[in-house]
Length: 591
Image (cartoon, rainbow, N blue to C red):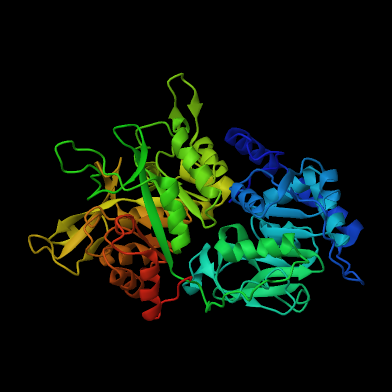
């Protein structure tokens, strides 16, 4: 994982992000040593608790945002504006010192972020600002950087404000890493900005965490359990930081931001009490988006990947407008919304301005994670200008995506990796996961069943089928496809999943062409084959036709999430009814 370096604007080009990240890595050891010397001189910028606690509420409506150009900060911006505040971007250390309230939504890797902060003089300014008990909110990496050091690509020194070392989750105890999804908090008294959460879930996405200890217990305002209890938030005086993403935690997350921005406001009504106790299973709404024959961008749905109506006109099936549907699914309780640009493999994504606009408009009012996929690979346009996959992904991130989904290009990369055993570091999967972190990269696998009489007939991993094939075949292997399922490749779903995990994928979206649009349930055999082979989260997709299919997949497999499209679009099944059913079956979900 690698973070992109500081830039005064979130619209820096991906190529400059990539080249500057190389510079940041080359500065890693020297910057860390320099900061270690500064830390010795400044005693790690140790925080002094204020004797007289007071909230410094500003009379203006401006929030200062420290955005160093990595990942999707648009969602934080949208949430701040949604709450009625304007934004001033940090461009110099003086901007930090002059801030009335400062939000630091850190994204990416610890070492690269510290290199950037040190190089730009931001580290010292942050310490000074926080020492004076000025209103501060760190998000995700913005929390981790407050600690003494991190083991990520390290050890690497942090700001040293809070005792403790940031370490990686242990995936050997059957907990999947990254930790992705909606989890519960154990909140201490006097947590202030968490007062309106009401025992409801918040959204996490990270591979590293800080642990509570006697040395930092006075800082800890909440913990979360994911195999172990880790620090979910800290607070001292006006200084706050959270490991979760409030800008992606729906109304609950907006309440956290509101509490920070309006510290003196009293709660008008008691928050809705939830029953969050652990990591919830996710229900994801998927929108297959493409241009129809009239040139309009529409949500469609395939039947085994065929999106055209079986009529004389043979038109593209139109199930609604993408921005409106995404907004409705957010209100209905979708835990994530996924956009798939299903003609992206043919066209140049950066020329697809309507799709980018869909992301931008959606992210203004949808405060849960957004994933976008389709055509993320290197391109050369009609004028001969070459664009890297990193530039394509970066434009999606800047437009509001939290995660990008790679399909065909990941298949080609995995095939080459399995053939040579060499990680080139140049593939879209490797580049994007290195710059933005593996939690930002989903690999979409589109396999088709190939029935077998004997599992030894092929070199790929085969499974014994729960239901025999059309000729009473007892086995099948799952052949991966590319180009929207149009072309089969010499690699199985099992082999592909293991390869892309090694190459940097943080999550797998597991489709099944045979089940797509059939409404007969998810392919349990396939999901078990893949989810048991990897330690990253797996999203089950294709085949949902009833609420029972969701409980089946969660009770019979290790899937972390289940995705559906057509049954939601056609209003055959609602997201709310799915969650009500899952709760009755004893499966934890976000409500």
